[in-house]
Length: 628
Image: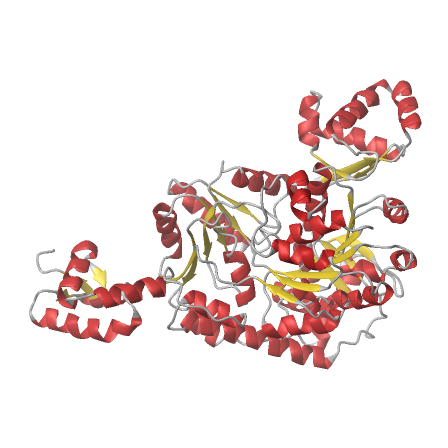
């Protein structure tokens, strides 16, 4: 089949998005490629379509367990055989999946980069004959990327084992330096890039003293679905409650919620039962919701890459959308004066020792073990502050000592592991379990072949039993070795990639700490430059990614510039603005106009005040003379 025939058969789409077919044709012809597609550009199609055309399974290296499992579930729903070799799999299930991998049971094999170092995997991979190696979030391979992950460097070894297999590296955001590093690390000679310009997305910076009310004002002005990003779990809840009190349908999502609460909040937002979702930055990855009209940032993110990716979740349907970044009066000052602090060696060692104690990891043991990690409980138990823990864990992750999977599993998963004959015999012997097994067999195709996501509450309602009793039955089936049952995980995973060092023996490379400090400084400066630039917002963003563009014409700066050129009589314009907005502070009035005419406005206001056409009151408040 041709690429378009594969697309229409399995996905039902009539045509490819821009650049997708070029990327597919490149890898189908056996050539390596680095593909840059902005958020919403359809990266997964670029390796899934050729994966079904090429002989042999496609290896997909991806950094997030939840994202891998969601993509596997989507492929399975289309009748495509796929598996995720995740760290959360039981050892027996993992070994079985690895054995099945060697027999050609899967079209797609998803794995975390850390899996490449596993002895179990390495023993098999040299005998496997993949058709394609796809690397998602490829910027993770570069130390200049905003989410550098050392395990990605192991991909080079995979290339050495299978030099003839085409490699497709994909990312949504990479600077020229990162692109160059990716190509160097993976020995890729061709780069296919879609412009970072989003013609339908209006970027706006808005300074306000009351960000809560400004969020409500934006949402009342622009109808449709919205995401509001904030760094704080507490702010997620508080802003959602504020919006609800303002009559705006809102909910919140963050890692501290139970899986049922996260799943409900996400599903209701996706189905438009909830209009606005308040979320921390991990929300949105892998969610295909094209009709988001606004993405609002309550605070400035740490990097332009993160901002572009999060803001880019608006307007994926190609219709007009808005990305609004709110600034408080102190935002710029706090960024300018921000101290770039790196944890000291003693702090990193203390966090490392405490992690070992928390998970009872013996010296010399623990390598490639993964554990649900309750960071709040961990910090309380060892009296550690959040900043020290986060920074220390980042250093440990950058050195390849640990891995911290921030996302949680949104669904439980199971597979029938006994043969059909054994299952039938079990049903005869245990009539109560027969009802459960029949419900599973009716509800899920391919349940004998691979782990499938299940919703216990939905099945329990169908069987007219409680969720608690249904889960108890599934656990019993797992215990009796009829099924594999992996319950959904409310906590992130923390993995130990190296054996536990004796106390005081952990060594952290000093050049890593120096590099980390420089990286923080560079990102801080890039964000500050973006926030203070006196030019088109879109131009500023794409310039960071090494691209030139004409003024977008729809960002707040471009709109104000257009207005500036249209003012024939500034005095009359200001009187008109005051009639609509009075009373108003002089600072708020200035914010309505481009900086390029602020000096002219100041002169015009002084003239109007001298002529007593405008009154200047206490606190620089302006109003018209006939107002009390």
